[in-house]
Image 1 (cartoon, rainbow, N blue to C red):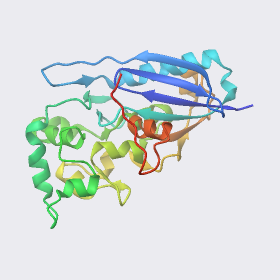
Image 2 (image 1 turned 135 degrees about the horizontal axis):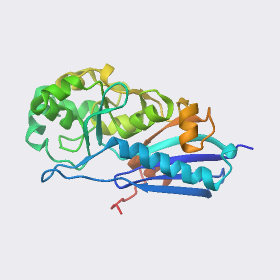
Image 3 (image 1 turned 45 degrees about the vertical axis):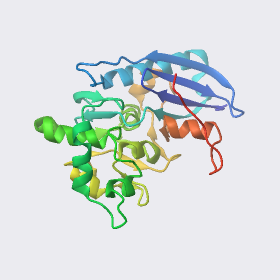
Length: 266
């Protein structure tokens, strides 16, 4: 009987995988660390290969602890604002830039100015994306590449969040959740699509980003090779999840305007 769902949480320091029962009990858990590099002060990078290697290890630990035939579906939670830079086949063009990377700070105001200001004085980038004018959204690091690494920027086929990359490794499809696309600062929150205005300012278009899908959408299925690597049953659906912060709010039942949760990290 398929009575378990597996949540993959690929965060800044580790990937965890937990098999959950319908009544919310953890049946098995796996975990593997992710390395963080700082090649220069305030520059923070990761090897996307570690995202996949840690996911594969965590899933293998889960499928070794429970009967894989019980697993009905898999979904992804991911560290937000972290940017992977890939060729179409999933190989990295350069190391990923992590959400806490500060290298683009001198260009933040320049990018916001390029998009202009609404009549009421609101920065247009804020109105479209919902993000304040700040260095954390990944769009600033794409713009930094445009200005500082133009050859690598031009050679990049896919600028992706962690969810989009893991979906590609699990299913062969570049796709992500709205709730994982959102933190990149490129997503139009009202239209529920990549913003043509913001992507153009960053020197890219929607064809160089994962396909954004409604959370809960089946994005693809586990293929034979991935099944052999992870122990997951071939054909297991991979479902759009979201950014770890959004899903933490969901897990805490912070679902109404009069409810909040505080996350101070671990």
